[in-house]
Amino acid sequence: MTHTADAIRHIRLSTATLPLSTPISDAKVFTGRQRPMTEVVFLFTEITTEQGHKGLGFSYSKRAGGPAQYAHAAEVAELAIGEDPNDIAKLNTKLLWAGASVGRSGVATQALASIDVALWDLKAKRAGLPLAKLLGAHRDSVRTYNTSGGFLNASIEEIKDRATASLADGIGGIKIKVGLPDSAEDLRRVAAIREHLGPDVPLMVDANQQWDRATALRMGRRLEEFDLVWIEEPLDAYDAEGHADLTRRLDTPIATGEMLASVGEHTRLIETRACNVIQPDAPRVGGITQFLKLAALADHSGLDLAPHFAMEIHLHLAAAYSREAWVEHFDWLDPLFNERLETRDGRMVVPDRPGLGVTLSDQARAWTTDSVGFGRH
Image (cartoon, rainbow, N blue to C red; front, top):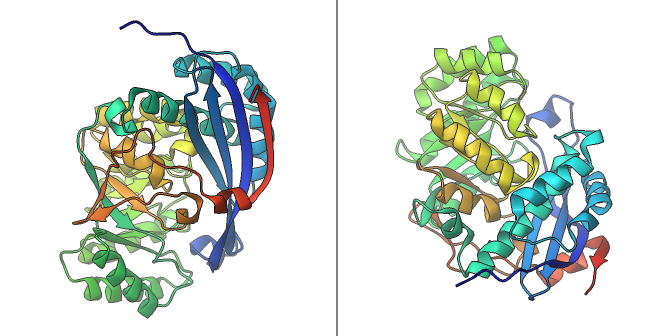
């Protein structure tokens, strides 16, 4: 069967603001570096081809940056009109060079991520396959842990209740936030949750970059007794040497990478052996095309994988990683999509729907604050 040439006919970009029901605080709030988070801003891309194939992609920004992503995408998206949607790598490079003046990291690549994800969604739909199957899945479900119930604005009792509910919903592990100015309070919270969960439930902690090197080592040693799956972002995201030192000196695995915004930045983590578990975020590093480059490097170096946020995308990418990965369960995005991801027996199940397997909800449309179209409807 020969390939019939197709072309991108129309691209619609839209930005939507998702309100959070409760203001969210991690250690960055308690150290005075950020305000509580009240919303997440999304950039959605919807692509339609001459043959009627469609793809949906998204990227996002927590706090500032959403309008900048939207503006940058709107500057370059028209360059994809008329191109073959199957040539994803070619399009990724074309759009990257169109905005090369502002770099190949951060807002510029995050804006392109939404388009790149939409192209992969379209390609998988055209093949009639879930994205994981198109990429070449190693498994049909992935270990999953809950983060959204363990923030520092929640009391210990609230975290216990949410953890119990998550486990009842088929989620396998629990992550809680640490990094408070009072390290004794951090230890008290971790001890209480470990006691509540028992010794066999996987437990992770996340300091959100708020420790210095001495505190991270001291806390890492104190946390060894709790048999954690990992300690996440104990240091500044760009302190590869500090993370590498912790990785060598602690028995508990070190996880980091979510705040880095390019494959190049992650390469430094990998080359310095700065973590045991790498946590790239496809929307932040420039999309699925870039994520796959990074995953190949991480796999070659023997690292475990636990992608950050955006489980609707990362479930597929984790299923295609050679080692058993972890996917982060957040229920925040539920209102944006008509479909729900299934969790059972501690795992998140790859949907059998083609592509990412999600469609935008009426609520997502209602939260849209701006949109622009290119090409012909």
